[in-house]
Amino acid sequence: GDRMVYLSKEMCQLLKAWRKECEWDRQQTANETVDEDDYLFRQPNGKPMCPSTFTYRFKLILKANNLPLDLNVHSLRHTNASLLIAQGVDVRTVASLLGHAQASTTLDIYAHAFDKNKRKAQEKLGKAIGL
Image (cartoon, rainbow, N blue to C red; front, side):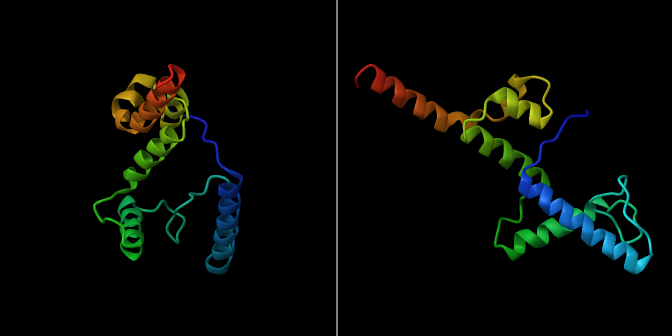
């Protein structure tokens, strides 16, 4: 479904720089401009990039950085959610960012990410009761 995506200032700067690069590229090759409906990742002819091309390039990045090759683009979604939870972001917010209608879905999928929070909670309880 449709949802609002919030970006950091740094990501906005990167996207603006990418847009300028795309505009320059389009002017050099086709004497065209980039408009609001253009794709972020596209073929030189302006059509959408094939998903397999994106996956191929992702695998090249993994290989170049000695990262596990069994990762996929969807792994980034899981990493993002796990890091948000580990940083203490509330489950409803994480669920909303992931597009989950129910926070319980997020809890079911990312229960493992709460282990660190469980330990912290137990430590706080222990201190509260004088242990």
